[in-house]
Length: 75
Image 1 (tube, rainbow, N blue to C red):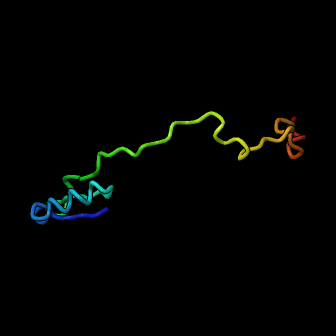
Image 2 (image 1 turned 120 degrees about the horizontal axis):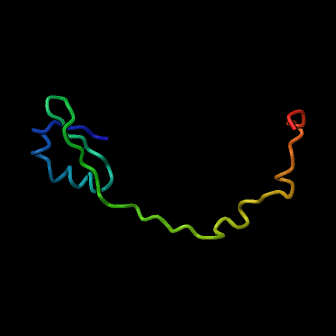
Image 3 (image 1 turned 45 degrees about the vertical axis):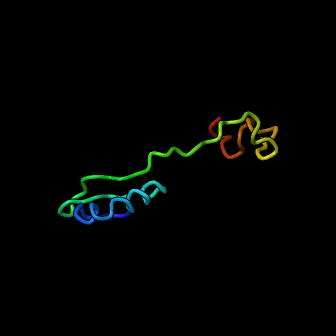
């Protein structure tokens, strides 16, 4: 995250907007106190969840719901 004073931000607003559009946040300060945050409004496109997309990646053993030996004293 980049920080810049407002008097410098005004002089370089075009460059700051380009940087923000690429996904980097920029904080504009006045007297070293943050007043504005520039950030992109582009939304990252997420893939829709797909049923079965983890097939052959995740495996569940046949005895996954059997009691564990370490917990026999609590059963």
